[in-house]
Length: 158
Image (cartoon, rainbow, N blue to C red; front, side):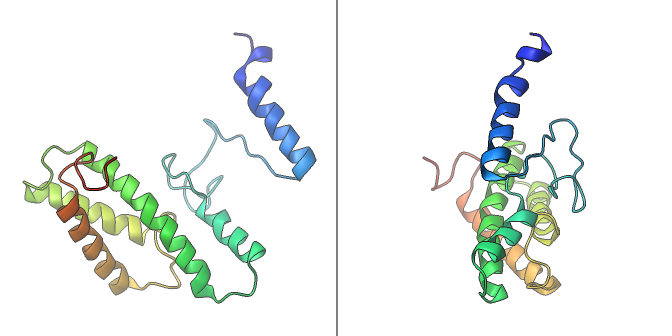
């Protein structure tokens, strides 16, 4: 298919232009061009992170002004929790019988801690110190250990 009839040109670029002109939205085409990390193109750790936390906080504060910082932190924590569960399930899919071996349990426990501690994916830095992150990662690990026999074998599976 030629470039003039590509999905990007016919659908994505047309839609982005419409949103920019009618709603004054700013669009970023980052496919195969995005840099990752806190100072990256969109502030994402990697392509699996679908919520742009950097912009979420800005939007929460802009559209809901005047609330205590804790309210914004709580909203982000909820998003972090949802993202963390999805990331852990992705990790579990790569590990067979993860609960049976100490090394695989340690891998998941470390993954949870790193995820929560990471500035890009984790908890609001100004609201949680190292011991908070350590305690919360232990609580999350215990929950995952008790509820997730595998990525698809858990009480929340549809």
